[in-house]
Amino acid sequence: MSDAMKNTRRAVLIVSGGMDSCVLSYYYAAAGFNLHLLSFDYGQRHLKELDYAKRYIEHLRQRYSSGPQALEILHETIELPIARLSPNSTSALLNADVEMPHGHYSDDNMKITVVPYRNPNMLLQAATVAWNEGASVIAYAAHAGDHSQYPDCRPAFVEAFNTMLARSMDDNTVTVEVPFMRFTKAQIARLGASLGVPFEQTWSCYEGGEQHCGLCGTCVERREAFLLAGVPDPTVYEREPDPSVYER
Ligand SMILES: [Zn+2]
Image (cartoon, rainbow, N blue to C red; front, top):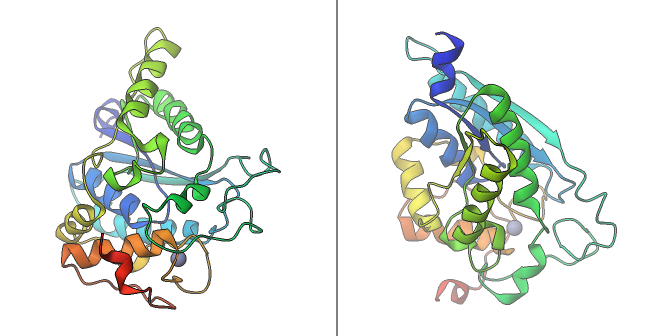
């Protein structure tokens, strides 16, 4: 395959160790895109998610990197000094002294898991890589459930970011795509199941302990997604939340 051909269907994806990012990677690979996957060490408390990104990407490569239709799948982890530049952070993801909130992910107390300007920081790195490689698509796995807490996952942010990209370069060719923008996490779980993604190789929990804690906002969201999707949840959780947390 020539470099020009490689780049016509090439996407740069921002991927964490979580299930949404994993499904995103499979979604673009299934559509025949060569991939450059970027993970970020921004000083997050649950750094272990980066090991899980490596695990499911290895699985992805086994599936899509051989045979006549083999895709190129590159992966790298980029350090972003977000935690270092935020010594006074009140975000529970950056400051281990801030107690991780338990409960439903749409609760107001989940706002302390916001990392200021995280997605714009990551997307700019992705745009730089995409420009360098002639890829026209950059994407991340924001979904409808993220909108209430995370402004940089909302449609208005994506629209503004694309405007900024277009005005940053006179001959800009890079656009952010968010294919799951209107999906619930349960719909992502269902899509992932249909693509055969290895959910057991993904990590969601913000606590970053030995196993998923079962109680933090992202653990509750993960469990609820599998339940609503009717997809078996392979995750081992340390504790069971009060079932009423799901009844919203
Ligand atoms: Zn958790």
